Image (cartoon, rainbow, N blue to C red; front, side, top):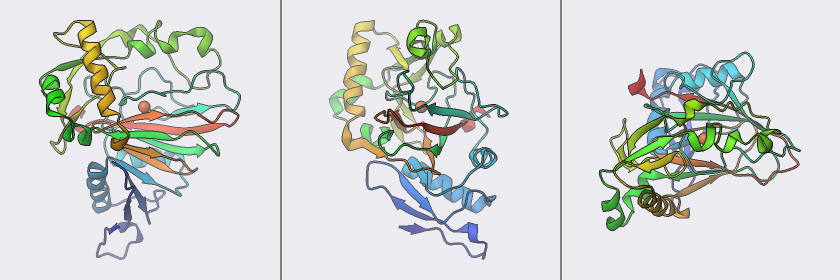
Length: 295
Ligand SMILES: [Fe+2]
């Protein structure tokens, strides 16, 4: 455990860090996110975030104002296409499922948020309001560790390759969310659009814009192809990369409690929702944090 001690007597200038013991993630305690945080605390949190990739703040009683204020300590809001925000807010979306909902679980595949954008969001904040008694864990997988430990032979075949990212398989009219029959009973405010067919390239192996550490960026799904490779060869390579980059030894599987805020670094981890809670309501509020280079 690390305690960030400060010399002032302000109670918010201290917090404690407890690593999960898995491949990423740390719990942050002894901090009240309803209060305004000082620049020293924000800097210390940012450093811990870059180190642990996923920060977990249990036992926080947050309003949407608190969630928005906390998010903005780390950057401007990201641009969230294809999901309409909750009423009265421009930058908060509800990740939501009713106890009797028939639509498939949202985001139950590994991905990094909005990787099809030119400058994808640096981070995502997810705050739990209603959490079922079982199921619904969120998986994280450390893409810096996955690259560091990758066999050289596979890494050689990924080096220098540019991945073609697109939201088409999800959010275009003929994507997963365009299936009107399957989607008829979904709580979440998903808006399919032809805009989802746009493509954007990013290197398969990318330097983290803040730390400079190299990691794998993205995976098959939002990655629809690889520049200079035919579809079949690209698919085979992406599936080989996927099998490696999602290995259990690189994962942290997060179990939620209510009133918990989790903030992850989209530049260094993939994440994935999990079901297993049919018969129970589930509700979380989400913001995204723009990357600094987007400002
Ligand atoms: Fe996501």
